[in-house]
Length: 99
Image 1 (spheres, rainbow, N blue to C red):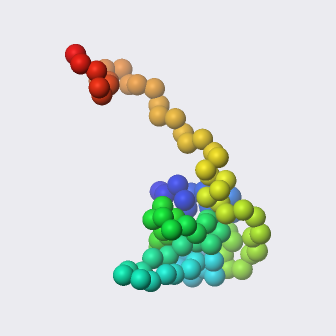
Image 2: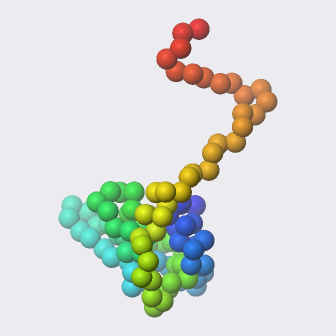
């Protein structure tokens, strides 16, 4: 599942009966193509904030108010999960070193 919608579900809960396409916070843009953004998650010029209409709605649906910072701002300062330790027998490659 996408980190974006997972963050929304973690913060606000889920509404399994609805999709993001039905939410008042979803905005759509069109130029050469059509794309969608969640105003609560954060709107940027990057594809990183593009939103899928098919995502399960978060707990803000249908009309709960949110006046906080965009969620993407909170995620920027949050550490991502570190990869698990190396599995026994797994090969390790280091680029730029000669063997």
